[in-house]
Image (cartoon, rainbow, N blue to C red; front, side, top):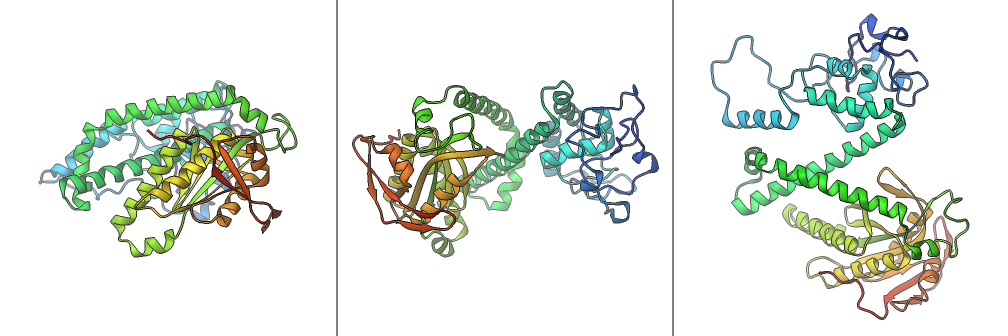
Length: 426
């Protein structure tokens, strides 16, 4: 593929307008400073251009990143509303200054072809832009240079750079939506204002929260990164031993490298309940469910992988930890005066962890067992039961064999609490 010359006009994360002839020039001359690791034909980041950009005959008009009122031909005679002034001040603070740069200028400033820059912007989840949209600040250029320099210095491959960038974009997008909704809901309840009023008022309230939220974000990321490193470097001895029980292969030769306890908890009759609830009550139920799951899983030393409506997926380092979490979840929902009971299942086995999610037959089997569990009970498979049978904290009650799609005949085992107090929540 032809490399784009970074000193030419360049474009960003939108379907391109018809490109000028010089925009599709051949490879940059050696020593021109235009070549980067992102722009080489062999590089993984830059694939065939047709994969990312429409052909000239199919080009679509670029869409602006932000909706803006058309600028009048003559200066406005009125004054800007207080709400608009507050929004502009907040934007300047968050973006690091006034928007002054176009996408081609930002890409060129980072020493990148536009195609490469667009891949990174798309990974971050940025909306489409046109060549003439003045939508960037110098901070955008600095951020682009930061990830590119990691590749140029050999610290990341291009594929890893894109994957990590996509993780940041997706996680922060979900986090921001979550935080805004939580703040709006709090204002509605505490200040007694309608939802629409709360959303407008939030613009003036956010400046007082930005620094604290940013500090907590960095703090949490560092703590979570440290916890992840510890899981890599100091695997629990019980987990290493259990990973060999009943499983072929060892820690080094398995195509699915991680041995983990994988669990699902599924609320009973959630669909019928949600149909009878108004929006506010349903939101409170979902929030209560997610908060309770997150608390129990974290106290038990596990990790909440994701929630999907009325279901939560979690993992733990050892079979015992997974069993403790599963029993605690089941007990919590049974005793809760608002939430319905839950079906819970847990399987010990090997998984593949990618893109913040987990994959493999172990995950599928745990999902299948969840559907077989009675409300208020926990099921495990026979291999997981074998890993727990010597632990007095658990009682294992075999159930009749079941024919499970994709797995054939399996032998479910009901997990019940044995001696000890179980997982204790403060």
